[in-house]
Image (cartoon, rainbow, N blue to C red):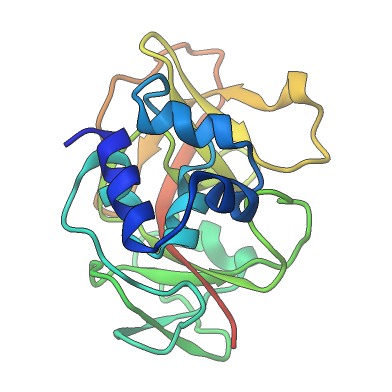
Length: 226
């Protein structure tokens, strides 16, 4: 089953027209139509589409697993995961790190590894992608693929960021989703290392001039704090 076929199946299952889905996602009907008809093999709106249709984003994009009717408005079902402080995320790279939990345990409604954790969005700079207060369920274990939303640590500065992983067939980039970053500066070529049990599903640059970046998890689910 192709991406377009999965999208059409999920949309009809929710009883939505292409126009309704497009308005909920913040895009045009032609974009939805192009995906369903195979003219677009991917889209930056896939995570938002999965949220609206209440399906597993990995199933929608790659066909992994099964279609799941999970609600992004519920974060109190499934296994409990610790909420971490953004400022302490670089500590995950240290040997024998014992990460302190902030003040809540959120339950993840989809399958995940024992190393999974949560973060809360504390900025409104991800307009179009994430909202202030969203709870992100992050899993460092497993395979990273193009268009994954990842938590990354700039190794030299220990700066933490959320970026889209982009592989164009020749090069690998981390794309900023911060709307305050100018478009011409959003793509970062980096020497990527998947940490904590992660694996990269494509070749990465060995350019010695590219900054080293550690991937410490991919967002597997997004929920709203209720």
